[in-house]
Image 1 (cartoon, rainbow, N blue to C red):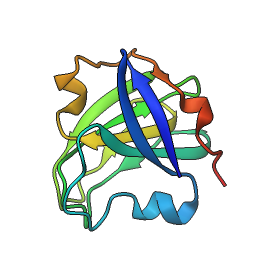
Image 2: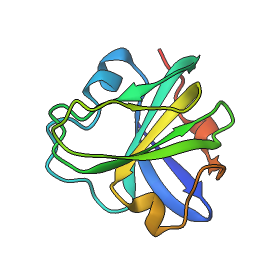
Image 3: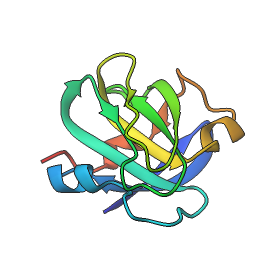
Amino acid sequence: PEVSLTINKKPLIAEVAATDNSRTTGLMHRRMLPENRGMLFVFPSTAPLSFWMMNTHVPLSIAFLDDAGVIINIDDMKPLTTDPHPSTRPARYALEMNQGWFAKHGIKAGAKVEGIEKAPPAH
């Protein structure tokens, strides 16, 4: 499934990873990610989250979001590494975009992701 989101009036389309399997696979093995497209990871509850880039070829930036869709922190991730990229506090969602996408659009911690309520729930 996909969901239309907006951050600071910038629209994007995100594939939704709301199952254990889709969250585990994420964007692994892909060679490119189209502009203004990403992946929204939906978790069943708020918890400390940490991501890595094993088998992920595309450089990504990740934003961790709270229950209301407010960005907690953003981190850049290097392809094909197992370096941990944690949320700075418990998060409910993570949004991966092409590396630099958030910075390019002036999006920082504290910005609200609009439309997150339209995403399928975690299961």
